[in-house]
Length: 151
Image (cartoon, rainbow, N blue to C red; front, side, top):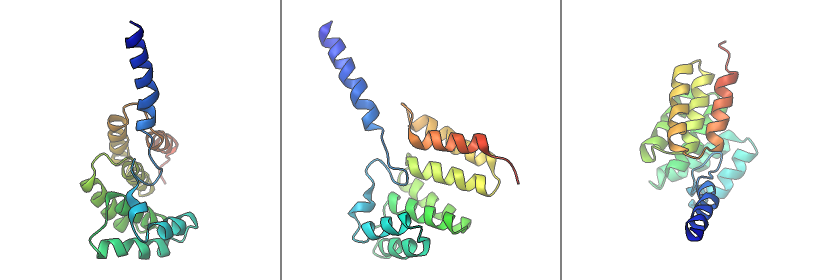
């Protein structure tokens, strides 16, 4: 009995840590592996959206883009109000990793920005499915959906 309690306690401590993800990236955040990743992340932190796009496009051109790269590209385009490009990049991120927490959150927020509450709710439902123990992206998109008011 003591062994079972110990195992269950260890699982309870480990599982929430295993579901932690980065706001813009995935659980692994492969942007750090890109030669341009650190500069791109700094550009995003500095809200230099065009600079970030230029850096991240280098991975696209080199055929080394990951789901995280496409997610960051979508995020930068969304912040420039370039929703068609944002949606295109989020779709590529989700094609590469259908369970990408950040891409689901950000595409959901993009749908809210263009007035499509139903699609935002679909992404929220996907986050609810993939974030079994909850995650920051689910909480953020849930709050954005709750606060949404049509223009």
